Length: 481
Image (tube, rainbow, N blue to C red):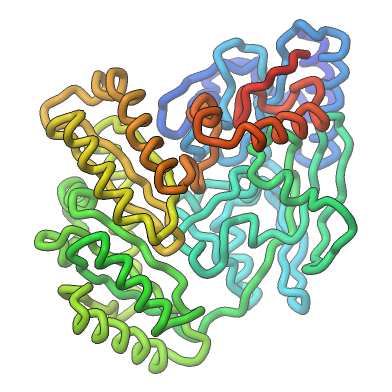
């Protein structure tokens, strides 16, 4: 493959084809569950260079069909399902989009922003704010994840309740196909009925159908006020009841509704003693609400206080606090975002990113809690997430005193089956926002419709007949090169 590597160096420059030294920033996933080996890390600086790289790889694979060559597109490498790092064969090229980080344009009249795929999410948020607008996609990794990765996995986050997933915030894409062609689909149109919706085919495909190189994103007016409240609720049923009241009182101003279990918050209190976690010790759950109001701070506060008064009267809230300033609000959100970090400090764990209808959430949690407690006495459940859109991070920690690595190795399959079976029984999905990657690919055949899987395989085979793009992710294929 030396001839191929030489050709890639000609395309992107020798300094940007990495084959030696410590490549773990690209070859090891964020959770450190997998450490692969790359043939090379290739770092193009433009869409044209991406296209040339892909075309060179496709031609090499045509000439050497048994070489095992493939491409793994990668953004910020913050994924949680091992979908953007190479396997252990040493035959995969990691194509990093990090150098492609430009903001191409802001169209204020059209309320759109066009950026390259390697642009950091936080940079997109800041650029939108500088132009007087709001880009509402927000998640814990926003300081390092990239727009290409966000779209490749159809990322969610804390604002999905009001604005939808990454898919709903994108109007157009630029994509390099598995043949090395460039689809110029950076339309800022909100209406375009001219055939199949190719944009939404690539979003959420995790780089298995092509490489997203740029995107046109929706912008929104900045709210006049954003207020945050923290409420203690006695049960999951009470949390669902509070969500219903929040919809009634706040309407479209409700932009965040995050649920946090007592044990999850206890981990934050234990491992981040600089954060004072309110109201959690006597309550099964706490809820973090955000009210983004288009009128005024006075109106927003009045709405929020009216909601909490009604919730207290109905008994679905036992106590609550409203942040008095931005610093207090940021601290409350920091507590929420610190849960995954605190869980990592506690030790290796089994992560789940599931969704069920909000109406089924209480029944799902009650059933699954009981089954896990019976199967594994002393098991600890780190239950938190985006209740407003029916998405929980229903994570499982080893019992106290048990070796976490041993627990993960011996119990993961059993725990996954219990959780995933319960998800299926309640009409849910085993992956709400993290994607499938390689960690869940073998589960998909048991929890997704065979008709849907066959349709997905047909699309993959039609668009990527060489299986060049991120093989073994999302789908196990029945066809061979």
